[in-house]
Image (cartoon, rainbow, N blue to C red):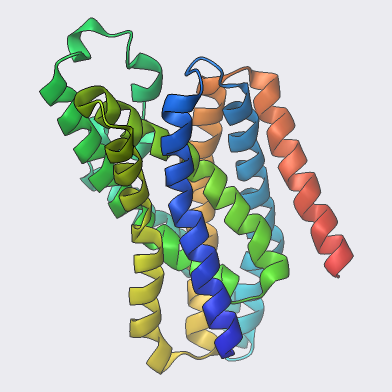
Length: 269
């Protein structure tokens, strides 16, 4: 783990986190009913994350555990994998459904639900969404950082996938804030701040784990990362992609994401 790799990992994690700001921009510069792009993009993200989790990250964790725990490497990898799923599922459970980024129904409803036009309700909605997304993005930041340490070839598709899946979260934060305050800058600021927890999660994880970093910890982090990414894909990306548009557009996105990731791994290998 060289200094260059660490710096690159932080930069990539920061880019992924700040992509919520792009969602903030889209929220008031494009029509909300033009969601075909989001449908394909979210499906694409899910395809990338699922494919790379099972074909690269999980095997890398298994290989690392095998160097020290040959007889129990698969057990250790599976524990880390499902531990990652349990971690993100626990965060989902602790956040109320109405303010959970995995239960976002606000983007389509805003402007159409007469009961939600009260300014204070909009403002509270935006604040709570920003906080819940920040909490949700914290372990995601550590996961992105861990993958980015492997090098740009593996990290770049993952960072793009994370960035794309952060865009609708930025939209969900920015729209109610904009409706409540009338300020585009405040809407953009809140959406950006909600994404800063990703590099913060990477930084705290790095400071805690770095003094003890070894093959076992690296393998555990990779296994947890794979679990988080698979959970996000099946719990958030795919259902949201379906909700935003047509079924076949979502599937096209998934297949395209898997194919591009497969092609990149073939070229690298």
